[in-house]
Amino acid sequence: MSEDRVTLNAVGSATELDLVPGTIGDTGIDINRLRSATGKVTLDFGFANTAGCKSKITYVNGEEGILRYRGYPIEQLAEHSTFLEVAYLLFHGDLPTGDELARFQSEITHHTLLNEEMKKFFDAFPKSAHPMAILSSATSALATFYPALQNPVDPYAVEQSALRLIAKMPTVAAMAYKKSIGLPYVYPRNDLNYSTNFLNMMFSLPVEDTEVDPVIARALDVLLILHADHEQNCSTSTVRLVGSSRANLFASVSAGISALWGPLHGGANQQVLEMLAQIHEDGHDYKKAIARAKDKDDPFRLWGFGHRVYKSFDPRATILRNFTHDVLDRLGADDPLLEIAVQLEDVAMSDDYFIERDLYPNVDFYSGITFRALGFPVRMFTVLFAIGRLPGWIAQWKEMVEDPDTRIGRPRQIYQGEVLRDYLPVTDR
Ligand code: SDX
Image (cartoon, rainbow, N blue to C red; front, side, top):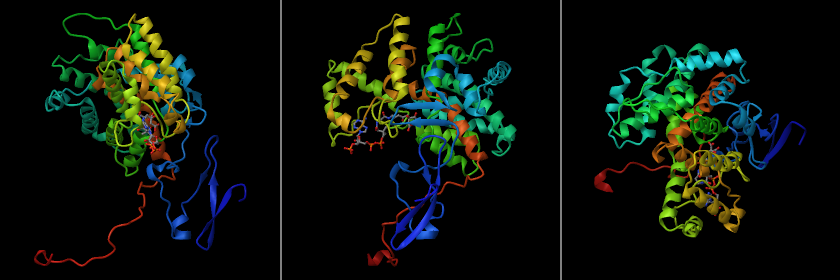
């Protein structure tokens, strides 16, 4: 093996393959010529060993528990930045100047309204509709109001689509929530910042003046920062794959929302709260949950535990574990589920089953308790994850579209079905 190539010896043939180094982290073996050179393909369930792209957006080191957006450590961004500043950073690649940030915030603020026609869209859903179903449908539907912004290779159209999605997602989310509880929609306000505006649309009523607690608004902003991007996770890979067919940004993000909804991915934050509530109801019998999680015949998992990449602590979970205590203290609230979560973590972290499999708490383990402390109902938790992840999806989609190496995503397969059969008339079967 030379510095920049490896030799693959496959059934009598030696093939030289280029190495593709990162500025930090994994080095790739370029297998673009593999099938033509060896007649073989690779097989990699869940793409656990396969890079689908080169990226400059987010770096995750699972062994050391590192997460950086455009090189900035998540710990520093959570402490010093705001969600819209992080959204700007992910999209443009650098932190904005004061003027750039002010302009970006103003553009977002002035795009928060939905076309009034969209109200009929919400009327079509039953009150019981899960807000993630509404969010993914509404996101795709939004494209119909911006026919001039559909061209994925027009930088102006992409930037304008990004602004509208980031601006309108909280409005859609709040309307979905109000619809589910039969209360009137609350319009966005231009005098409120992003997170305060969202909380006002979610929880205020037209019949009284209410002030959003700045502690809650800041806590929500930090939560959104922590969810903003995470390199090539399931929903981001979905956004990239759908976008690789030149589908527009709205359609690609709509697909990402659907992927995030799954309980193994973003839907885990709702599962965690339901699991903790069940343990609470069972008289704090968290040992039963641990036993079920270890039982191969039981589909139950210890929700909020384990990660494809983090084989040590998820830095977001570390931040959230302390942050949740602070938020509850500052709100003068306490939540028995937090105590159960801490106990569950302690027991799991001393259990060989979890230790041997490198299963640690992930971002979803504590986020739900914080969302609940801020007043959000459980069914809105994954919607909050989607609002947070939106700038990451957009930045990753834009990077994919702009990458000259991008091709339409079309994996191969290993066929193991019937080789060849002749059709038999039904009378002969
Ligand atoms: C997110 O990729 C990302 O970056 C995602 C994310 C992001 O920001 O975008 O970080 C957000 O999705 C976090 C993950 C939220 N999901 C959950 O909390 C659901 C519970 N966790 C798992 O289902 C699981 O850990 C995954 C899905 C997160 C990871 O799945 P993998 O990498 O495919 O691992 P696996 O399912 O093959 O598990 C390996 C072993 C298995 O046991 P063995 O067959 O080796 O005996 O660990 C076991 C699993 O059964 N295992 C668990 C477990 N997670 C894994 N056992 C019990 N409880 C769990 N939570």
